[in-house]
Image (cartoon, rainbow, N blue to C red; front, side, top):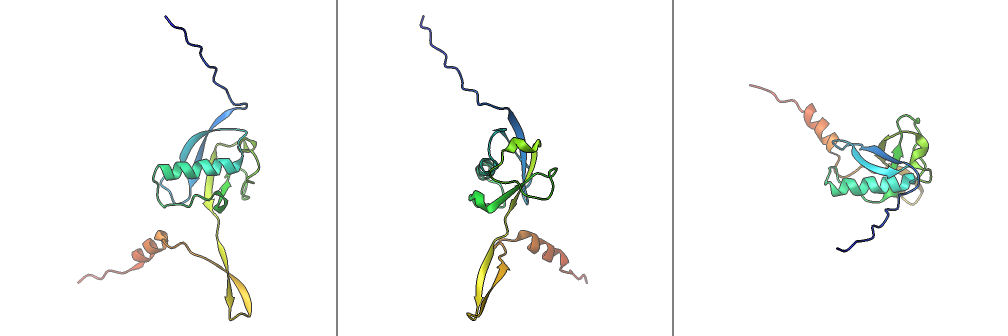
Length: 137
């Protein structure tokens, strides 16, 4: 009979938390376990990877710099990517896509900032289709 040495699992320091991240426009929250010492940027990255792996809609980009993580109980400011996720004392978060602005030159006189709309804005299409009046005979 052979005896095998059992390797001890390295337990990360700190507590582990089950968090829930709601992506705006998605059907429901994404839940996963994180170490409370993880940075907010790492949590955003994990949420985006889980979102893509599950094949959720709408399709999001994978650049974590394009997103902001909010804690509904902490106020209206987004969480800093460099703070730890456990510092908020919360387990529910919301992931928002940053609004992207472009500089457009107008006749080489001045540049003005405009907000670029996403190409597949299904909410606007849906609301517009509800407003169409269907007349009956």
